[in-house]
Image (cartoon, one colour):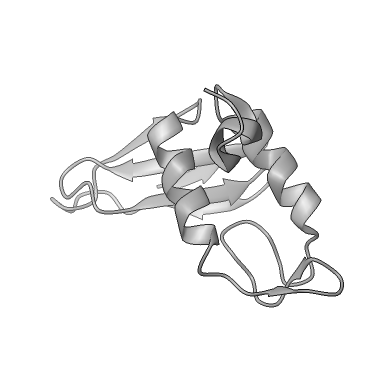
Amino acid sequence: MILDVQNIMETLILKNLKSNDLTLLFPRGAEIYAPDGNERAEWKIINESEDSDVEDLWDNLTDIPFNPETEELDEPYYIWPKGTNKEDIWSWFDEHHSKGVAYLLGFAD
């Protein structure tokens, strides 16, 4: 099964319903192959980010190296290529978490 993301939203989240072990993020316009007919590959499309998924991405971001001089990614991370500025990434988190990036940074309740 091929999913066309162009008319969904900026980011599409797919969850494996059988194993619930993976969340994949894809940018708008991406062509996604989601296998079907496989017991482990029953996928659910979630049109809105869930805070817990966004928080997991945020927590994992601490393990990703940034260039301290430019504040750009030193390697690709999820939907962001190497060289993406930290402010652009934080903007995405601000848009996709119900309480915003200030909450994720620990500055808001």
